[in-house]
Amino acid sequence: MEDLFNLNLDDFSGKSSSAGRKVDENMYNPGPDQGQNGIYKSVIRFIPWVTDPTKSRYKKYAAKLINPLTNEKLYVDCPSTTGASSILWTLDLELKRLKNEEPSIVEEIQKYFNRYYNYYSCVYVKKDPQFPTLEGKIKVYSYGYTIDNLIQQEINPEQELVTTQKINPFSLTTGKDFVLVIKRKTKAWRDFSASKFMNEVSPLIISTQGKEIPVSTEPKVMQFVSEYFKKNSPDMSQYFLKEWTDVEYEKVADYIKAIIPYKQIIDNLVSNTKDERMKKHFKLSSPVARTQAPLGEDIEFTPAPAVKNTSSSISLDDNFELTAPAPTPIAKPAASGKADDLDELFADL
Image (cartoon, rainbow, N blue to C red; front, side):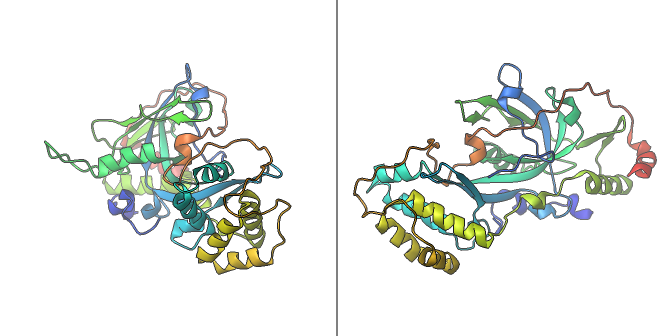
């Protein structure tokens, strides 16, 4: 319980050693098409994950692969999330190395391969005019570079002309509410640039059963908050890195061979990867129907839907449209009450 009220800034700064997005009822998935005039606005609060506060800001690498022969898509987590060997990471590095030498080949491959990263955190939905039924609930929110950069600016402010206080937005007592603004940049890309943290720090206010409970370090309040989080927080671990099964190892190898018809790139890839298990899949699995050819030789690709060309420095959440569930808006009664009502609330937890 005490860890929720004594957060370590290093766990949120990106300096910590720990390093296909899901859509379900536990996720908060707002989108511009659900907002008024194409703009979605809400107020949320980043909160620590009650099970392990050090993982409240979880960064995960993943990849999307498209088979040019069948147009089938494969979404997998990338083992490099934990620093483990990953042929997807090796492929990303190989494409960066070839970008100046063979730009057209790299561009063609990146139509079918995209390695990206996203962050996952628990958020408390304070105000959502689009879907009032979500207000007062704790959800898991997946976000990218733009929003994480705003978090980092609070944790590690640029000190130039004046000294700025370091703020942990995840703090329950001295954090900040976050104004989330989502616009549409293009047909498939979202714009989060208008989002911002409030100027002043404030305690999280939990609205439940018509009462508002400001979070404080008072022992009774701390106990209530801890129990409330345990009961109402989704299990964030279900969005953490998932190890590949034998079937996924085989699929990844087959997709890569279908995507890359150049023998030299495949040879470099297999030679440079440290994933011995994946090397075996390349040696043992049958070749795909697509003919492999020396690097630089013209290849006719089977047409497939183009995917936006991005690098591993880009977050999927900043770029691509993701479908969100659409609850039916229902008016929410105004909350009232004080922290003195804790005894009554404890009885219902």
